[in-house]
Image (cartoon, rainbow, N blue to C red):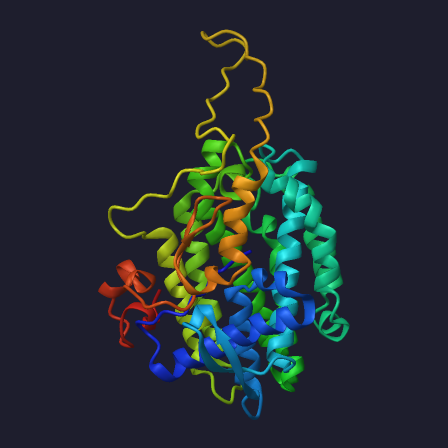
Length: 393
């Protein structure tokens, strides 16, 4: 879920990039040690940013330890944020909460008939409860995040979406996500011992959750229109220009809230949450020239859903709905998912999501500049640099 922020090697110096990798590996090891080997598949880049934000508020840096050789580091050891620290525990709880929320969302798609049934929605239905239990397993962190309340609120997302009609308020659809993310961000102030930051982080988290939901909808819009899945932009009939303006306003609000935080060392957190959301805005609305959104790549799902003629149209009465697509072969589809996500490959290399066909950037690879392509920002006169450092959005 989400994956808005990325570590852009083109904008992080060696010190900050090493810090990012320390949080990435620390979170991965925390998931392994506390929830089992397969839980490493749920490492989430936004949760890494939350781990970074927690350390940025602490009076002293989180402890480090030497991690053993890892294939994803070329069998080299590394200094990582210590598993068991407040930063990694909160990041792990957030990763699992986001994963549980996504599984709930897939289950809701089936219950409320918000899209064609696929292996992905069936898997989400099966995994929703196990993931919820894992998300709540670290009781102190779940309590400070209000994780139970957040998951209960997100479980109602399907009913909210099923009730949407053209002309409804787009931001009302994103409200459960905003509320849950607000509590997760505010929790970082609590565990870091900076209660004065809680109101600002609750506001920043709400804006971040809304932005992530909207950017996800923008990215998925072409595919959702082809395969008949629910998309809040299409369902409410909101023009893309209006969606972009919402996103620009949210990015500005995130920057303003961040600038007021009491931080010990906020350099990396700023690069991820301020520069990162700005870059994500332009990735969604200004993709590099010559690129188009990838078509759905899930077997059995049609690449185009024809418009249904009205009963009195020249084409005659409506044809019966198409039969449910055949169940895709299990292992040929699950094995790539295991290979990409259960080994940690997804965090350290550009890859294609085997479930959706969407291309994802590497979490810790070198930067080719595309993650910092900020479109029209580079032509503005904002006085504080360009691309990911531009403040005018």
